[in-house]
Image (cartoon, rainbow, N blue to C red; front, side):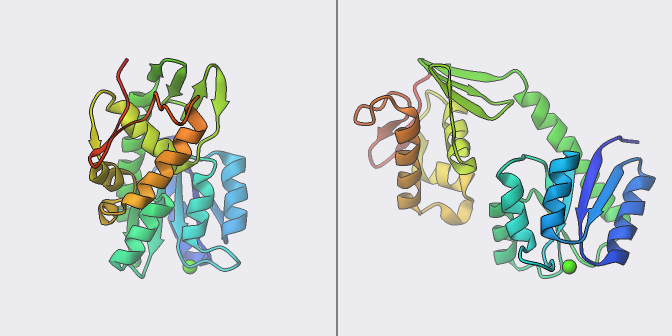
Amino acid sequence: MSSATIVIIEDEPKLAKLVKISLESEGYTAFTAPDGRSGLELIEDKSPDLVILDILLPGDMNGFEVARAIRGFSDVPIIILSSRISEADKLMGFQAGADDYVTKPFSCPELNARVKALLHRASLSASARASSKFVLGDLEIDFSRRRVFRAGSEISLTQTEYSVLQYLAQNAGKVLLHEEILGRVWGPEYRDEYQYLRNYISNLRRKIEPDQSKPRYILSKPGIGYYMPDS
Ligand code: CA
């Protein structure tokens, strides 16, 4: 039995109720919202441990947009429910920040198993991140809180900028190929989008480097990749 709290954003009342009852029978606390906007409010209100999110929702936000909005303020694991499950949709969902997919129609035991697995993964990565910090000169990255500081002042990064920086920091001392960074942060389909990466690196440098013309934290190996020094 688990005491995790789960928010379900699903507009079909019968399905929402069925999922809620099934999760509650596993010991979870579950809340439902019938559209994206009220779902976001519920997430801010309840700070759930996991979100189950339908893609086709009434109102002005579909599930992809809701997932992106959630990622603006939370790392909560997201399972997307979808009946249309093309590879393109999957990619779009993962880019929007979803962690897993369940295809409609699904059985409640199947969904419960995915919920359990994802909560388990999330707790493992939370404990791996806890108390881990990266310090290089004036730059400090607090992985557990996903926050970045330079000389003690917090630097505001987007989710993607943070992901690039985190990947470089966790591999400090090692040159990461352009393709590796693109594949890791954006997904395998993006391995050739060098310009994408250049833009993000230049934004990151503008934010974290004291002197952009002489980068200290994010260094280039022209034509190969980027790296952060390890001391
Ligand atoms: Ca729906």
